[in-house]
Length: 157
Image 1: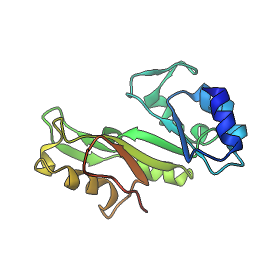
Image 2 (image 1 turned 90 degrees about the vertical axis):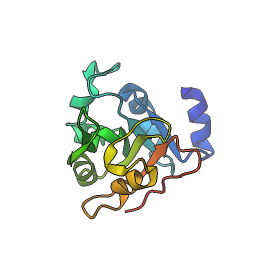
Image 3 (image 1 turned 45 degrees about the horizontal axis):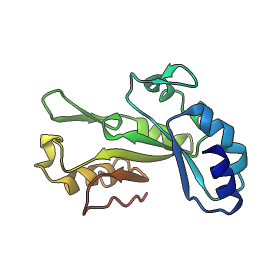
Image 4 (image 1 turned 45 degrees about the vertical axis):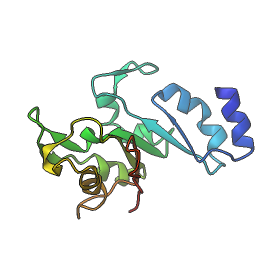
């Protein structure tokens, strides 16, 4: 994969390169500094161990200054942004989007899908859920990844 990305970097082909591994992104950051490609660090579950640092993703999220050394953005599960109770209701938002923006990182939300249960607060409307991440008057993610076959998330600030 590393060689393939080096080939692509010489031709300015990728817009984004995403990985959940610190070691991988750190190894290619130098090659991509002059390219237009954005390196995005993908966070997995908060208690999941990141293999190259042996630190859980939840702790890495508290050190966004470190993340900024090898990435220009983060891809985080939506529940990192809006807390959801065990009974399926949205609680308050976290400061992760504002913290990342303060560090100069773009924020992309993930794990949107209209084929699994999501918070009751949105009355089973996936568009209403997505809008709570980009049009809530407090913060806005820069984009997202979804599994919604006919609904696309468009990021904006």
